[in-house]
Image (cartoon, rainbow, N blue to C red; front, top):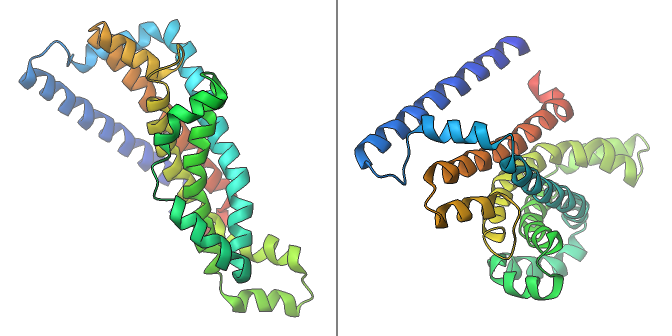
Length: 252
């Protein structure tokens, strides 16, 4: 199948999915018949109007926090995960600490993070980074451990050193799993973003949604929810574009 036809089918599928979701939303609004569940047309109209003003500021603030956190997590977790996955002796001592702390819901540390880092961007970025870091780290470590030794020995037999092994064997082999973890982490980052922006801040989509809810402004609240969905979609779309560029060998 040609890449162009695949992209066309993906676009058609996206439009169909959007139409189905809007139809279900409209049906739910009619059945529930509550002012706090407006029809999609009212919410979309509010979104378009607010996107030219205050909503754009909140959307950019959330995008900055989520994007910076994901990037920072990627830079920290991928090298460490690759190293642990290819060094069993070190992994033997470090892995227990990772798996003991990984199940702890990091969001419970929010009061302490706010206490030490304040209510600015630093506390929110730190907490999102901490949560996403673990997801990428564990996936990268497991992927690095699963690289076939035969592939590594083949390159070493040709004179490849440690850096060449990482560059030409380990990283390409782990890249699909890393991108999958990054795709999942993008959704996690948006979910955590809503929680950390729900209080102790005056900027961000989380604040915008909760502020509209306290004012019983349903159209504005759903406009914020739509903006949150757009943010998550853009992040995941960015990962998909990275995968198309970095993993072109898989598409063949």
